[in-house]
Length: 227
Image 1 (cartoon, rainbow, N blue to C red):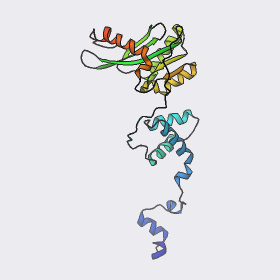
Image 2 (image 1 turned 90 degrees about the vertical axis):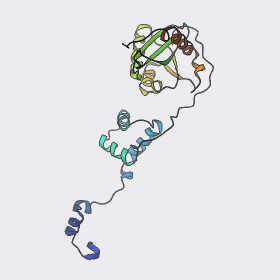
Image 3 (image 1 turned 45 degrees about the horizontal axis):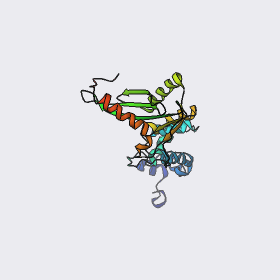
Image 4 (image 1 turned 180 degrees about the vertical axis):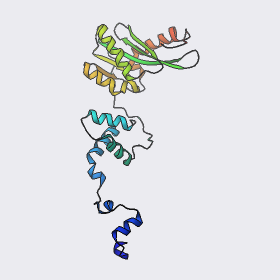
């Protein structure tokens, strides 16, 4: 309008409802300016594609980045990461190893989850933990929801009562893949060993316990509530 029809800048900006400060502001490439944030977000998305924006923000803060949460959310939306994504859960390659048989107590523990229903139909879960050498049931935690933080509390209680093993053998459930459990294992020098997907025989000790627990407890008694 200014160059073709000789309209003044003030009248042209008024007609287009464009602020003159925006007209004079030089264009910029947001991807170049925010490249560091984009790289950090893409790295987290590649590792944890099912997380939400607030979990990404918390992880970036934990890694030492001081970017404002509004800036991270803006870039998160501009990259299209807020769109629903159907992603296949990618697990690290698990080596095929024979089942390690401990030579003494408190060397290797095995853990697994089971589920059942209360009398009125509500589902509940149990977290079972045994010592592979003595086959002693160390803990059976019951609730309608058992998150990784709850599992860490159970392990901390056992640490006070009897100490910790060198290794805990688990499957690839979301609670066992959670960062909270692995951070706890690294802090306490306990190896969280994951068996291969769809290979329950590699966790044979706890599978044998689960069958006995199902047949002799859960299948014989009615549960009216979980406390």
